[in-house]
Each structure stands twice: as C-alpha cells, then as structure tokens.
Image 1 (cartoon, rainbow over the protein chains, first blue to last red):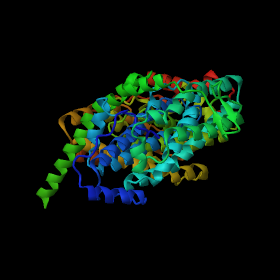
Image 2 (image 1 turned 180 degrees about the vertical axis):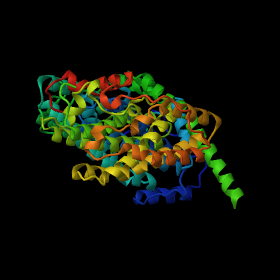
Image 3 (image 1 turned 45 degrees about the horizontal axis):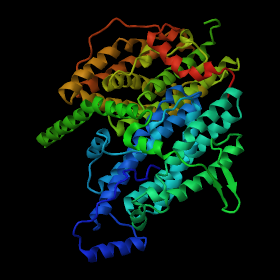
Image 4 (image 1 turned 30 degrees about the horizontal axis):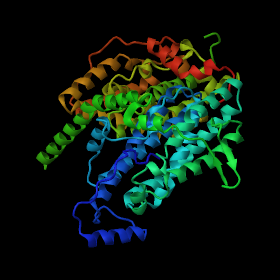
Length: 329
Length: 248
C-alpha cells in the first residue's frame, strides 16, 4: 500500500541531463523494460523512487504498531500466532523495501532519520488508533485490501528491485486480507456485542481506507509523470472506485454496512456511487495531525533511541572480532 | 488448585505454561525492538513458543479429560493455577535483560526437549522432537547476543551483566525436580551439569563472569508466582474474560 505520493509538491525537474539519454530511458520504460540499479536514470526518477519506496517501507514499519497493539490481547492462541506472524511479515516487507531503496544510493539509517525527524511521510492510515479486537479484522480486510489494490500494479513497475519486492509482498498481503476478513466474518456472526464491535470498526476505518489511495486525481500533481515512468499504473480515483466496488458487497455478505448514506449501485456506470471523502481530514493527517500520529512517532523514536546501544554493541563487537581474527592469522 | 490434575497432565501444563508465558513476553517486543532484524527474530522465537504452548496445553487438557482445550487452559486460569517457572514471567526490561532470560531458558529448554524426545510417552516425545530444532536456534540466537553485548561496548557490557544478575536467581528453579516430573520419568537435576557447561562456555566467550550465587527463588511450579504474572494474565486474558462464551 502506502504508495501514494503525499508530499503534494511538484517533483523537481531534472537538471541538465543529456536529452538522448533521457529519451533512451523513456523509451525503455515505455517498452515495459525493467530499470536496474546500475542503469542510467534521470535524477528526478531516482529521487521520486527513493521517496516512494522509503515512504512505503516506513509505512510497513509504523504499520506494525497499531496491530502490534493487540498481539498481547489476541483472543486465543490461534489468533495470537496469526497476528504475530502477520506483524512480523510487515517488518519483513519494511526490510526488503529499505533494501530496494538502498540500491538507489540512500542508506537505511538516512531513511530512518528522515522518518523520525518528520521529513519523510508514511501512510495516513496508521495514525488512527486500534480500539477493539475488531480493528484487527478491519485492518486486515480494508487496509490490506486497499494495499493490495495499490500494489498489484506495482509488480510491473519500471524499477526492477521495487517490482520484485512487490511480487513477494503482494502474496503475503492477500493472505493477510483473507485473514482479516475472516476475523470480521466471525465477529459479524458472533454475539450481539461482537457484531457491534465489527460494525464500529468498519465505521471508523472506512473513510481512512478510502484515503489510502491518495488525493483525487485533479489534486495529484505527480500522477501524470509517475504513470509515464510506470511508477504508478492506475490513478488514485480509479483504484478507489475499484476498492469500493469490491468491498461493499463483501461487507453486505457478512451483514455489515459501509458508513456512507450516499453509497448506491449505479447501473449505468457499472460502479458504486459513494460520498465525498473528507479531504480536509486527509490533508491534516498528511501534515502530521492524525489522532495518534504523536504516539506512533514517539514509539518509533523510542525504539530507535533505546536500541542505539544495542546497534553500537553489535558494531563494536564485529570490529573487535575482525581485529582478533586478523591478529590470529 | 481445587482439584490437582493427574501428574502427567501437570507435566504437560508446566511445559505448556513455560512456552506460553515466554511467548507472551516476547511478543510484547513486536514493533519496538532495537532493529528490524531483531524484531523479526524475537517474533520468530515468540511464534515457536506459542506453537509449543498450544501443543503441550492441548495435551494437558486431553490427559486431564475434563473437556478443557489449550485456549481454555491459557485464558481461563488464574495465577495460582499457572505452573510456569518464574524465569519466563520476568519482565522484558531492556534488550539485555530479555537476552539474559532467553539465554538461561533456551539452553534449559533445549536439554529438556532432547531428554523428552526420548520419553516413553510418545505424545510428549513427539512434541519435544518436533520443537527441538526450534529451541536449538533460540539457544544459539540468545548465546550470540550474550557474546555480542558482553564483549561489545562498555554500555552493552554493563547492561548484559545487569540482565544476567536480574535473572540468575530464577535459574535453580529450572532444575528443581519433584514427583510430578518423575511421573514422566524426567530427571531435571541431571540436566544441570550440561547446562552449567554450556552457560559457562558462552559467558567465557563473552568475557563475562558467572553472576554471584543468589538464594534460589522458587515456587512457580506450584503456583507461587511473582507479582508480574497477574498483570501479564490480565492483559492476555482480557477478551476471553470480558466476553465470556464468545467464539473468536
């Protein structure tokens, strides 16, 4: 998921690049060839990719927090193991996405610092709290569902390492999505309290999930260039519509209702019509004013700061052992 | 305990509770570890322990024969009916304290499972044999960190010493044998010398001293726990307690 450009700024134009090289590059991309780390690429392409991939990686890592919030309270051993494995998968995704970004000449530490300083963004969705167990179902079903929709096209994105990471990630995400829906299904068929919990979670996560596809197309300045570069393959509004069309019947099938009075099947369009997303809320959350944005950043900063001595120990130890080995030879 | 379980069920409970409580503790780290790689490896260990807990608690319920399954045992008992050792319920503390707990426990668990894998009771032997590979990895992982932190930087060394010092008083309990273990033909005391040798070898590599002897703190096996366990259970059991009878 988490691949929408949320900076709202126009990408810097390439500076004095050989037009022939640019043209050759553009032709390769248009031809759906993969660009590899050692290949020449326009500086703006490289920068855009670093921003997009690192933002995606940060989202995976920050995304561990809302779900991690329920691991110790999972309702039975099976659910506990599934959730733990799921959150672990997110960490793994973060790891290979950071590795993919590193091939573009930026280090993981630099990217982490950018996240912690607030310079780098992550998906707005993780700035909302997980209040009940049903939120774990809703996140799997809706958030991972939206993520898959964003990511499936990226398996064919133009940058090789990113595309290959996406192939792996998509497989796991679709598994997560089914697990989340299964949690919701159980709750929706459970006691009245459980059903209430499920509906309440859907009510709270519906709008934030729609926001995951990013601003409307007419407010998404980078879309055109990103589409040309095959960094993006469908527009925000196209993906959002697809998500609504797939998710609404899934909710109905388990007796839940998406919280939108304007939601209605439009026979002529062959799509659901749905109400306007609260974009003021979206932009506020992008700017760092999400309900639990401070908590999320505090947790990441604490993990990073508290872990500094561990990372330092590993470094010092490796140096010591290497020196000892050298001395012994 | 109102009704003492049959000795073999009690054996399975001890094994299951050790794994469950340690798995629960380790899962508290998820998303908060010092590096992503560490996060992933702690989650691996937690997952293994929770899987082992499900097997052993399932077996305990089966032997007991009162219709309690692994979840019923995990989520519907109070402190005095838990039979885990005190070591595994100790708080995570900093990463060094977590490593110290894992180090002392995993070497014990590996030796224990190796012995159990030879048990005449095929049910215990099957679970232990399958889990043995997992806990071997846990022991290696923990030992590597003891060495890295002990023979690392000044701060990590001080923290590793403090972590070991915190956990050391609970080590003797691991090897305290009684008639319940005897029901399974287990001689835990016999594992001690092998454990001592392993611990000492790793400490030597880490350039660390064995912590000073401490009067053993005992009681976990008979439900006499530390204050920490009640808080762990109230968090872990919250949903099952708040919504009795609901299926998840």
